[in-house]
Amino acid sequence: MGTPKFALPSLEALLKSEHQIAGIITQPDRPRGRGRKLSPTPVKELALKNGLLVFDPEDLKSDDLVEKLEATNPDLAVVVAFRILPEKIFTIPPKGTINLHPSLLPKYRGAAPINWALIEGETKTGVTTFFIRKKVDTGNIILQREVEISPDENYGELKERLAKIGAELVIETVELIEKGEVKILSQDNSQATSAPKLTPQVGKIDWSESAEKIKNLIRGLSPAPGAYTFFRGKLLKIFDSEVVDEDDPAKNPGEVITADKNQGIVVKTRMGGLKPLLLQPEGKKRITAEEFLRGYRIEIGERLD
Image 1 (tube, helix red, strand yellow):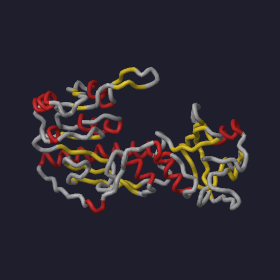
Image 2 (cartoon, one colour; image 1 turned 135 degrees about the vertical axis):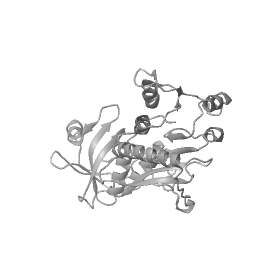
Image 3 (cartoon, helix red, strand yellow; image 1 turned 90 degrees about the vertical axis):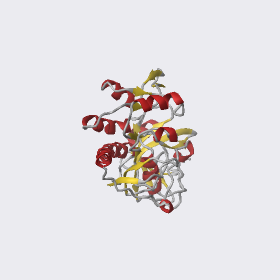
Image 4 (cartoon, one colour; image 1 turned 30 degrees about the vertical axis):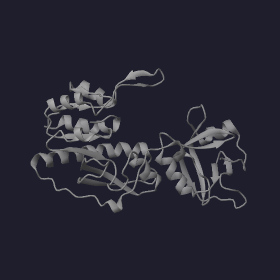
């Protein structure tokens, strides 16, 4: 059960394994791209290429779906980046339903664990497999693998890496279950942290924070949806940045303290300067700081809000 590209390495690993895939459950086709053409999910595309039985229900609670899934006679269900499952679905397989989660549970339970690990400046994260239960992300842990986060790694890069490592963990988990060698570990709820769905408000840059904190927000939302500020009254997204020592006590947070082709753009923060490297002005494509400087002729003292 899965939908986005993040789930593909796990499906590919299962296809290459000795295990038989009884069926795939994914989201229904949705309008995508500029033409809003109805398109299948990445998981559905790969499943159909491999001749797999595919279910793409709107309603996961329908009796019809339950009957169809029961008819496939599955031993185990594997969930990677899907929807919240009703109990009558995740209890169908006799060996249970497992989920791959991209964090070291119980840390970062919720919809956006990779983003929040970066936003919060974590230096390590990981992947976890666990048995699904009614309350989201609270089931007993089967396996975990810790992963170091590099200082400049962004959400897109870390997500791709965790998807591949997670696929290895899925196979290890399935094999342990098949052999009856699983040793589960209960989650310590007192250590739980939340990784809620990203809202537009999360992406708004607060220049009164430290440069390091702002950089973490930017990389936690890059390449999408993007951290943003406002410049000359228009939305400006920033997708890459660098922390620098430059400062100007006479300037306020959010004001430009450097703007030249040699040093680039530096914006004052509460602690340190932030140098945007990749930007996207409202309604335009992404450009480098050098291109932005040439196009907008920024003055020292101008403000980003």
